[in-house]
Each structure stands twice: as C-alpha cells, then as structure tokens.
Length: 484
Image (cartoon, rainbow, N blue to C red; front, side, top):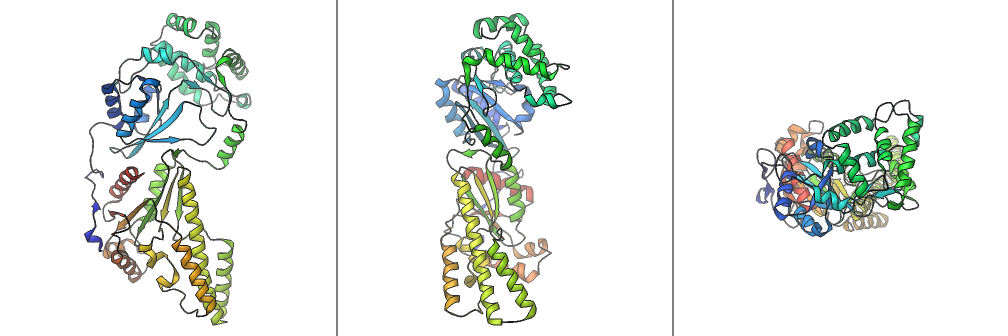
C-alpha cells in the first residue's frame, strides 16, 4: 500500500488536533469541583505560572473517600499514573502526568492521601492534619483559583515544619546558606500576611500539641537570614524529637539506592506499563531531530531511553571485525576472506541491534519509554534489516556464509513489533533538499523504499514530515501520549 492511501495525522495551525481555550489544570479543577471531590492544594499554589507550564508539580491532598472520583476524573482528562523507583516516595503518595495540548507540556500532579513531609530516603513524618486541611479548604474550580486552598494558619504550620526538616549537616560546610532559603523566605512572608500568630498558636495547641508554640517560633527563625547553620541543625533535631510519634523510617538500603540513582538517574515509570516507540522513515524525514525532541520532553519526569537501532552501539566483537576488514581492504589481500568478514560485520551489526532491542524492551518493562530510531520492523528491512534483504555482502558464498545469514536473519525475526510505530512520510524531492550531506540518488532510493513498503498491517501512525518541525513534534507528542 502506498503512503498516499494511508491516513495521516493532520494537526491544526497550532500543531494539535484541537486547541482547548482553558489549560488542562483549569479543566481538571472545574471537573473536580463539579463532582464535589474533597481535596486541596496544600502547597505551591502561589507558583501557578510555573506548574501550569509543566515546570513543577501540583501538590494535591485528596480525601480518601473521594479518591475513586479523583482518579476517574484524571483518567478522563488523559492523565496517566506513574510511580517512582523503590525508596523514592513515601506510602500514600502517587504521581499523575497529563498532556496539556495548548503548550505540549506534561502536567505533573503529585497526589497525596496522607500528608507526608521530609525526604522519603530519610526518616519522614506523616502530619495528622489531613481532615483539618480539607475541611478548611476554600475556592477552586475557577480561573482565579483553580484548586481549593486550606486555611492560611494551617498552611503556614505545614510550611515551617517541612522547611525546617530540610536543614542538613552539610550546611555546616557551606559559606552561604542553601539557595532554597531565598524562595522559602518569600513564601513565608506571603503566608504570614494572611495568617495571624493567634490563629497559628490556637491551631498548634488544638491539632498538633507535640509542637509547642516556642518550638514553632524557633523553627520559623531558622528560615530567616542570619540564622547560623549550627542553630538550624539544633532546631531541626528538636523538631524531629517532637514529631517522633509520626516518624516513618525508609528501607534499609534507601540511602544507597539514592546514591546509585545519582550515578544512573532514573525517572518514574507508568503503572500501566511503558512503551517501545519506533521512528522510521527515509533520510531527511527528521527521525533524529524528532527523537531528540521526544526524549528531552519526557526524560525530566519519566524513565526514558533514546536508542538508535540503525547505528547501534558497537560491541567489542563488531569493532574487532571491522578493524581487520578495513586493514585487509587497504592491502587488497585475501578477497575471499574479505567477503566473509564483510558478511560477518553485518551479522555483528544485527547482533548489536538485537542488544539495543532488548534494552528498549527492558526499559518498557520497567514502565519507561524507549525512543528508537530506525527500528528494524519487517516493513523497513530493506533499509535496516538482514544483509540479504538489503543486498549487502552477497559475495560470500559458502556453507559458513549460509549459516551466518541464517543466524543473522533469526536475530531480526526475534525482534517483536514496537508498541507505537511512527512513520515520518516525506516525498523524495523534499528529502533531497533537506539531506544535503548525502548523495541525492541515495536519498531518493531511501524515500522510494519507504513509500513502496506495505505499511497497512504494521499499525503505523503516519506523520506528514513535510510540515514545519514544531507541528511534527507537536503531533508526535499528542499521538504518543494518546497511545501510551
């Protein structure tokens, strides 16, 4: 089937199939209000411009009785549930990600059933203020206040406690206070304009008697400029002793896991499972550029890998065979051996592609997304498949060569179809104009092979790669999110 007979995703002028007037966050807030969900944004509501642009998370505390309605509404708006690697989150906290098609950004909702403060890889604390925060919440469901917010005195209490727990021993070695204190002071000033000391004292005495008013004031003072590091640590220790009844200790190896993740960072994985995403098409269709764009878009929040199966990472055996082959070709010696080494190198490349394929599916098995360029699907074997199909290394003719070709083909036959396949369709003339660093005849032939392949049974999503790049990337984002 030719490409012209297949459906093509056509974005609007903005690059999407539709362009809702309100943001995704605003639509979710309105839906939650209409359903009567009991919840509140317990921190961060003063940074709306940041989290509406996908630059931060939206921290929502949800009443357990409303959790089913909350999850249903988020699912209806395209949100997907994700969990961080083990040891990086406390119990009762999950993450949802949704695509705001107005900007093409991922919106991150950090959903709490229990109010937990402190780092999950250290001792953290469940503060029993959920009922009071939810009961005091007001607003929400409108543009000026997307989500309900709790009473200012409760919000101030939680702010001071969680920031005091952020003080660390390494602060003693710093010449300057940690940078986060500047933002903390701004947030503190904003909240103290709304909360009176009398209301804060009354709330502490009634709801959290283990934290005395004096200890709260000392904790507050650690957030002010000029407070020495030793005093901040002393007060932090006093606070942890006062909250020890609410303490929850992390797994034994949580600290080691955190150090390991600094060496090998890993994002969150989708609870519903990850995906292997393939980008195929002729030269000049923008596979590498689009793969880079999708990887940069996802990797800040989701476990993501970018793999090039057309030019996979070469193994030691591939390098060795290639080195010997080049050496013999330079001296024009042993032509029969050269022919077999040429075939062996293509077999080694197939093996390297299979290793990259396995890595991609391991990423997806862990809930991540593997972005694969030039994935060797059967429809594209003529460009990245067995050497015999491509017409390469045919000079080697022997029993050994037959065995090598059989093994090579078995490697490709073992590669399953990707979960999502994008075909970037581009006419030959545009491809030649774009790919100026390759011979025109070569680029035309690659475009012809792509167009001549029968993609009807592949499940490929056809993207018109002749559009401006922002439109192509926007369409890829929307289609990928829909199919995850």
